[in-house]
Amino acid sequence: MKKSSTHKVLFAIITSVVATSYSTQTLTAEDIDSQVIHNYSQVSLGYSYLDNVGDTGINGHGVIATASYEVQNFVFGLGGSYHVGDEDFGVGLETDLYTIGGRIGYAIRLADNRVNIIPSLGLTYSEISASVSGFGSVKEDATVIQPSITVSYAFNNRWSINAGYLYGRDLDSDIDSHAISVGTRIALAERVGFDVGVVFLEEYGFGGINAGVSFHF
Picture 1 (tube, one colour):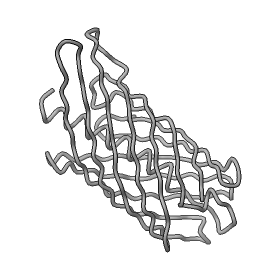
Picture 2 (cartoon, helix red, strand yellow; picture 1 turned 90 degrees about the vertical axis):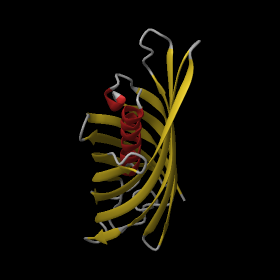
Picture 3 (cartoon, helix red, strand yellow; picture 1 turned 45 degrees about the horizontal axis):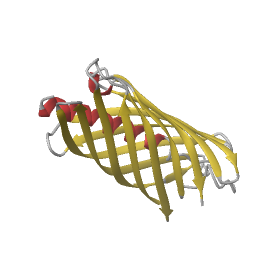
Picture 4 (spheres, one colour; picture 1 turned 120 degrees about the vertical axis):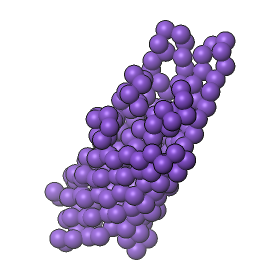
């Protein structure tokens, strides 16, 4: 792939992973004692699917891990993911995708904490590696700055939903992107939640889905 087209693929990866990651982390509830819905201090682990990455015909399957910590309404987060491409195009192509990043956000709590508006700023690094047996491998990376905003609503202390917008700007190639995410969290136990997030990309449509478990402290 040419550098510009590879950056577009990386950009789609970063946007899909980060947007769904945000949607499963920034969830809130009413002012109650829930340690899941109301608590931003957490670690999570889950399955991540990327759909037709960068319009290449390759889908990604992998794992995504996140951690965040809240201090006086400021939320500091870290996250990473690893995906394997599921299409070899009949030539034994192997594709690996790595993403790691961090963010800082601020939770604005309204309506007795039932509604939250959370602006965030993140920085993400991603690398894609493609190889064919007997022909070696190629690698490409990208660094993207990503402001975002999420609005979340808590029905009660067991269930929240949210929607968000994320803008991405590739610092290496000046490519930009826009994404919309939706997500939900269900409290399974006192400190355990189940999260699902879906992302839609401006250029490609449906971008991917994450599902996982969060542990709160």
